[in-house]
Image 1 (tube, rainbow, N blue to C red):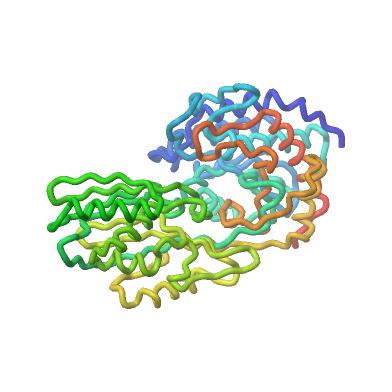
Image 2 (cartoon, rainbow, N blue to C red):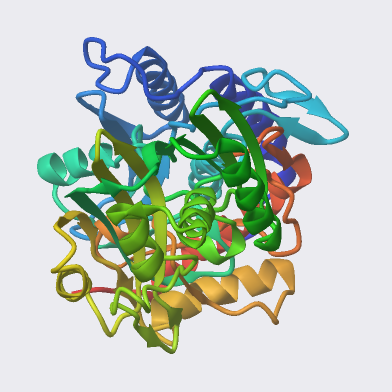
Amino acid sequence: MKINYQKYHEEMVKELQKIIQIKTVLDTPVENGPFGLGNKQCLEYVLHLCQRLGFKTKNLDGYCGYAEVGEGKEIFGIIVHLDVVPEGEGWDYPPYEGRIVNDRMYGRGTWDDKGPAMVSIYAIKALMDAGFKFNKRVRIIFGCNEETGSLCVEHYIKTEGQITYGYTPDADFPVIYGEKTINNLTIQGKESNQGDLQLVSIHAGEAFNAVISKANFVLKDLNNVNATIEQLKKILQELDIEYIIDSHDTTILLTVIGKAAHGSLPMLGKNAASYGIFALNKLGINNSFIQWYAKYIALEYNGKSLNCYAQDEYGDIAVNVGIVKYEKDQSFVGMNCRLPFNTDSNKVLNAMKETLKDENVSVKLEYDSKGFLMDKNGPMIQAMMKAYQQVTKDYETQPMCIAGGTYARHFHNCVGFGASLPFSPEENIHSANERIQLKNLDILLEIYVEAIQKLLNEVHFE
């Protein structure tokens, strides 16, 4: 089937700019817009575009919507999202303009995930124009809450049921055939302070799944503030961690500056809270929270001292501390774990409970999202690999199992398939100056057109 991919380039670019210009961060709910006005407007715009291009469309109460072509019992799904993370600071160009500079479009969502969403629309459009026979129903499902909870796809499944199989273009090429189980756990306790040097408060972190980059500590020293500060400086310098220390009368203000990283890869960061607590324990502060944290968590990110360590062929467990709070002798630790397939959230929870049973704390499982593992040699994964290799000529990069999570874990027989290309790692996803090379839109379009044909004709699920 011969398709002129360049024919769709200009229109894809123009329509992508239009939806970049609609700010779709989570916002105050409006009528038929549970995730805010921007998400409502963007969803409505995209569904109207799809309708104009020849799709049947349906808006599911503003949570999400879909565009459909084809007939049959089986539903092949392409699940994308229109919401974005907040823009943050440090942009060279306005984050909601879609400005094009040196063949790159800049804007929040250009890669994650509005760009791939737009390519998905035109991949189906290209097949429609070429007269391809859709032997199954093909649905592009547009979510509006992927970045902040995925309530959108929960609503989809509740109202529409499951798809038969499909993919989400919200990951990496060539194929993500497995995702590890992800959970959030909390540890809370009533702590005790003794001695002249006391811990007053800790405020550190905002999200379970992010390495803490800055931690603020307040101490009260009734003995010798200057001597304590000098000793603390020496310990922090030995730990090779940045810090700021100030004092006022008997109060010591300590800020520890670490290195941010995603919670799925905590070993790539430096947890500011953990370094600060480790330093205070070496200082000899007599506080029960500091002592048990330094004993059982310390600077680890694999849960060994918590006795929940696990490992399989896909790697070690990742245990990230994302939130630490201490106020009025009440402690709170929020943790995010990515699990090997030979363990589960209940095993991890019970191991932590047993380890901390004498520490006057409670351990709770707050969130549990089970992972999946598909056969990387099965027909579905192989069809995607062939399409990717056919277009890119990249025969080296292999299918992956990741510690991250996508929409794929919510749907039957679903995997991550692009859109990040291994030879073009400059998207700045979730960072300032998020961008897409416009030539990559054409590469993605061709990969997805080839893959959709193979997946519809060569892959079948009972």
